Image (cartoon, rainbow, N blue to C red; front, side, top):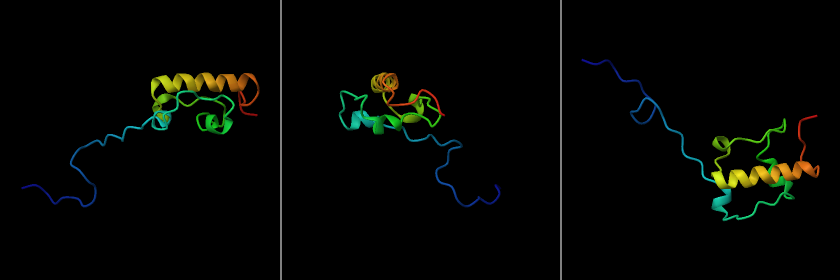
Length: 85
């Protein structure tokens, strides 16, 4: 005879798969990511100046590439920093 069940929790599995993130650019139907829009690009850069990877942002591969290109262009004309001060 099995012991008493512990209360709490939800489904029966051992591991819970996190919900798949959706690409914010695909949802908004964006075809061009503007490098001059610093407020939007800053969301995808850490405080130390590193670009967040695709697995943490949830971007699709195509938008991650264009977003990375836009960040690098913004860095070249000094809209975004290369590193933290």
